[in-house]
Amino acid sequence: MDKNEMIWERMRSYLPEDLKDFVLDTFSDCFSYSIPRPWDHVVAELLIIMEKRSRLVEKEFKVRQVKNKFGGLRFYVDITDGDDYVYGAIAMAEVECFKICPHCGSYNKTRLRTGRYNTKCTECE
Picture (cartoon, rainbow, N blue to C red):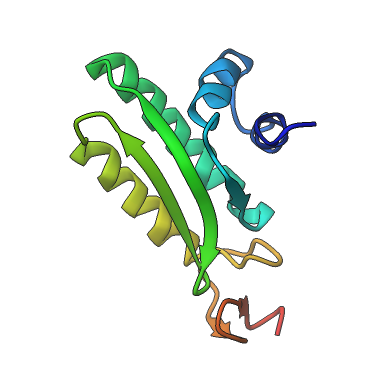
C-alpha cells in the first residue's frame, strides 16, 4: 500500500467516500504523515475545510508533511497564491491537537511533556 492509500485508510472513517480523490490528490506529494492516530479526526475536519475552499476559490492544495513536533501538530501545505482562510484553519487544527492526548485521545486534560517531542495527559503518565 502506498503512502496516499495509507493516509486515505486512516481518514476514511471520518470522511465521506466522495472525498477520496481529493485526499489522494492533495497528499500526492506528501513525504511524511507521522502523527498520532487520535489526531486523525482533526486532520479530517481540516481536509473538509480545504476541499470546500478549493471548490469555492478554485485553488489547489498540496500537503507536503504532517507531523508531531514538540508535542503538537505541524501541517505543511503548498497553496497556489496563498490563502489566509486555509492558513487560519491549519492554525486552529494545530491548536486543537495540543488539547488531545496523542496516546489515549482524551480531550482537554492537563498534558505533561515527557521528552522533547512527546506529551501525555495526566492519566497516561
